[in-house]
Image (cartoon, rainbow, N blue to C red; front, top):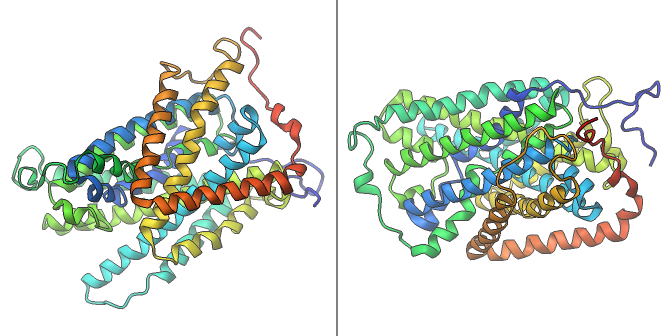
Length: 464
């Protein structure tokens, strides 16, 4: 197949637009993740109780802090679309790059499907509260995905500017709820003394809760997907990513504190929209409206960012011939990877139509977790090949190699946690990635331009 994907009619090469700043990077990372504060995280309560979920919140927060620090250093230096995929291509080689690219696409596409499911479920809940019990959520699922895909098709600046507004509004709704429950007056609204219990399933339940503790932060690494579209990668990527993880750590802790003080852990562990349920239990119609809008905005922002990130990873793989070059097209007017955006729409819709929220979440979590597992090796190799002082870096993360070691240990622990609850799905997913790796090695590797691994436009050595 000839490469019509990145050239204009006059033969001039078309690239992605460099129009984003740190605010857009923050909006991309936090926008994808913040929905995890509104749903999904609470399944960890069902595994380990309220205290187990808090431990998972902070332990997995440490995991993602390591992810954010490592990504900030490597991606501010390896500034190319595809994020971790580009890192793997230039540092570890084609087979690892193919797998990492696929991890990214599947993690974000499954997360997008989960977000669309949440929008549909939220509208069903609202309909039931107003006396209508027969609302079909599927048309709304398709409408949300189609509308956001259209925004992404038309341009990244508009897409992420919108994400900043609705993500900020969703975050503010959590702050408003926190103030509304009067945390400075224990027992007035929050009933922690009555609702908090010991670990119902012991420490094995705490470990099992790690799987869904990931939902608090899953997707913050998506900031790296914007590397080729930011004006100053060495500044914008570290600043947007590190402020993003700080925002999420605050939001996660506030979310746990509010929900566990209002909802019994037995119900909280299976609730679909826990923050919205918490707002309903306060008895304040104003808080209920704020959290309905916040939940809707958070799910929309997440799906919007997921479309952006999944399409960038798929586009990068097409541009590098890891997938058919047809997917490496850049729209001549809007400068977006439009074919990749359109191709992934039916995949997200089909998974959303299953209605299996916990299964879709698990697939997304596991794909993301596989990507995190490669990062410690990638970081160690990066520091060995390009030691500090050899090339200019936009950010240098501290305490190396401690973050890489901690990240690897926490990834292994979380795999074990996932096996406890979703062992069959874990094995099936592993088998899937093994099969596609064999397919790549036998049928696709021959199309890869192997020298591209060594063609990164690295920063000049220090002193030049």
